[in-house]
Image (cartoon, rainbow, N blue to C red; front, side, top):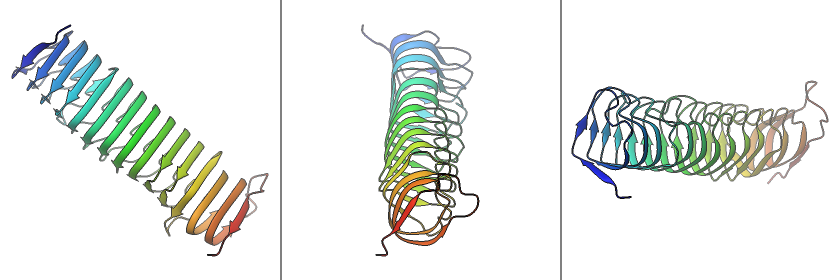
Length: 284
């Protein structure tokens, strides 16, 4: 079916483009109001600007390119499946909720507060997140390459995640996660990976206090630690190869930790059974 073209127009008010389908929007501006595009399918949008609230809800099969979403377009894209977004800037919070099959390439989000909630099958490439709290809450089946994020409390309650080449500065990241692997990334922030299951870090650099505690089946493959990392692995079952020095290891539950050097190993009366973690110091 051929696409209808809407070109060089402005729309405001409530639901001005409700129910459109097989339509391409070119240089269109949603100026104000609510729910500018809703209950639609098979849409393309290029060089468009969105200022009104909730402009893109219940839209299936869409491709958004070179568009701008203003801060007033909060909660802009929800309940929309099969979406590809490329080369866009988002200034509004609370984007991308309750969705399936979402892909973003070359997208900058300046207020990532409560963004990406309950998205199933999420793919990101060259994406930047700034500010806000709790992005990625409850998402699953995620593939990410080249992510820069300074948002707080990222990746909580996520499942089935693969991340490459990320720079994440945060606090309380990767809490209550399951089946997550992170490659060649910088993970900066306190209390990393608590209460995780099957978290694997490969060639990552880790900073921040008390990382990787209360973790089950934790794996570290040739990771490095910042000098401020202390009391790592408390109450965790862990299999780790650590390059370089770590300040302190405290009360790991079981497994094996191989490290070049360690400042202090703390095993006190609060350690959990079976209390049989082997710590091998190479002293290189």
